[in-house]
Amino acid sequence: YIVVSIFVNPSQFDSGADLTAYPRILESDLLMLNGLADLVFSPDENEIYPPGFSTYVTAPDVAKRWEGECRAGHFQGVVTVVLKLFTLIQPQAAFFGEKDYQQLQVIRQMVRDLNVPVEVFGCPLIREQNGLAMSSRNRNMSDSESRRALSLFQSLEQAKQQVRMGNRNSESLMASIVKTLEEAPVDRIQYVAIVDPESLEP
Image (cartoon, rainbow, N blue to C red; front, side, top):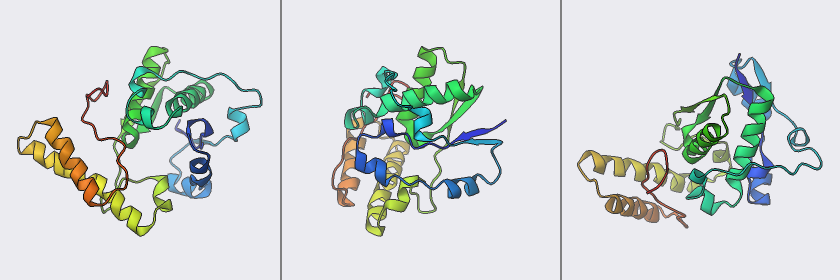
């Protein structure tokens, strides 16, 4: 059986405005599933966090850097809700997109650390025709924001090309990425990092 969960998780948002603006398009999501799922689990917020709820899971070390530094409490909310969903649904396997790569590694570490009997698979990132990563949030961007967001893909592609040509200097590669983003122009760069794919350490 294939179970798909659709839930906008309030505990992983560090901004009330971001939570309010996040797209909630259940009917559209169901249409996109096109009958793939045997069951869609789309609980109400009070079903997941009933009155008096106060138990949270501490995120593992792999959550400390990068998004963890920029979004306080985000990964605590992620691991808490994912563990709750695993407990409720009891899947044999779970599939998460590689677009949120750090989140995928955080969930894998949580599953290992807590002996959760679930095999976690990463699903390849899917892009629009122009290269922009597909995301629910894309519909909230203006045309100019979308063009600037595309510079992230362009900067990564340029860095990949440099690696193919023999550049193995991480400082040089990161500087190239930053330059492309600044020229877009991206207003604020929170981090650019080249990391170990599992530990996410530089």
